[in-house]
Amino acid sequence: MTDTKVPTELLTDVVDFVESTGEILAAREKQASEVTVQAKLTLDTLKKQGLAQTNVDETKQLALLSNPVEALKALAKTAELVTPAKLGRSEGGTNKTASMSKQSADQQFEVALGLA
Image 1 (cartoon, rainbow, N blue to C red):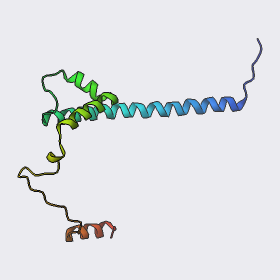
Image 2 (cartoon, one colour; image 1 turned 135 degrees about the horizontal axis):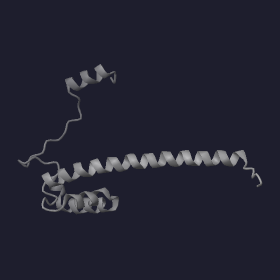
Image 3 (cartoon, rainbow, N blue to C red; image 1 turned 45 degrees about the vertical axis):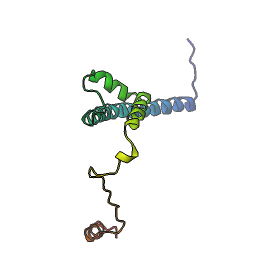
Image 4 (tube, rainbow, N blue to C red; image 1 turned 30 degrees about the vertical axis):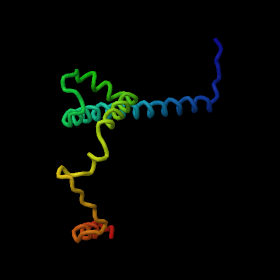
């Protein structure tokens, strides 16, 4: 049996590759977990707003929302249901423009945080 000599640099590169792969996989796993949680929250909100069917298998709906392409398609369909006229208006139909001037309480808050 002959001993094969592997250059130290190659071994170091392999170790670095394995470590970086592990970090990437851990990040993907964390992201997948976050997607699962966010999909559930999103589905609940869509149902409350009447933008998702309540009589459809929730598992299938969550699977769609967990898939980025399908989630974007659902977002596009949802956007078709909402018009700019519905956004930013009170139910009474009157709008109040936000003031850019700071209130006394805002100024005191910023001072307390050391931001002013």
